[in-house]
Length: 413
Length: 98
Image (cartoon, rainbow over all chains, first blue to last red; front, side, top):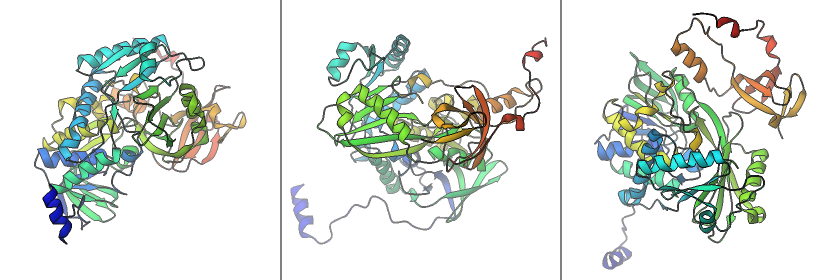
């Protein structure tokens, strides 16, 4: 409104909107403690406060908000997975992402650009047919397209890279991207507005378990009692679970990515090839983001290696030869907690009242909204596991009922 | 380039090797429960610190053990598995039951 603008322009007390209230002391007790102030933890807090009326919640973050894998991923949003369990889950996530800017009244810069995955072998073409059909069955928009259609979508793509000519593509119209920091801050701001306390620089050091039930959490700022707790700490999941004696099939691998100098817009879809271990996208700022496979062995570190850069960029240049002249601007890594079946660990743990949101490996960002929503349902229901996440329980490994998403990762890991 | 010292072939580029997982004690496949076997097959400690783990030198198909710090990526020692495994476990001989 122009008049109110003029009024505030002339007045000395312009209502500055504060995203997060200033830090305060920890209370002695909360109904729910969420460990990890990344996208998943903050989303869980938001859905608890907004849809379940549970606001006596603390989010404990050992460093700063969204500073872990939330800020380190390559911000790919898609739902073209392989299993029906996975597709149902991620389709719901994409749907929530589309509405998120409106829900927050805060722009997360969601951009539906489509995602193109390339097939270089007959076996991959067959797998793509299956993925396209599973996706369509659950309401997603995915098609198998031929070389001519790929050429029209991405004119600058080399369709005959080395010994691996492109045979077909899986064109996922729902694929897109969003600003990952904005997603975390949108959730944080809206959760805080409803009374959730967000404590940064608060590291969980140990747990108090009474009668096999989580009773309190010891942090570097004192001990807080809690009704229940949710763990959403990505790469360091095992370190917390080991303190509670929870055994899980997690391996922590570094995943490296990098970004070039900005270019004029030339690449609309997100392009990936699992045979070339590479995915490429152009950000809204014009930079080209490259991501690839994880490091070849586990490590709790975010260092970078020249070996991985060389192999990843060699493949990227095969796909887009003109990029050989591009200059790299930044590179980084994140620690990913990989599961053997490439599906997450969500739901109950052997400790009562302690809920897991782990095993997010290299596919966590795209699940942020649906993770928050289902974890909030789990907490609000007192441990009643929502149907959508029932297949992802930790106990699936002792029942030999894995949910195999191996064929659906953007780059083979 | 990172160098790993193979007990059989000497110092080589780490790209010549494949990581083979943590060293775990195998339960007796005849006597253990399904849950114990699943725990052995899938679960691991995934600790940050000094761990003992399996590595394979690809070209010579030679498996050995390494003590590595999973926080700093320092390899303290590599050694032949015969230091720990003195008896051969023969699975084939046990397939006669029922």
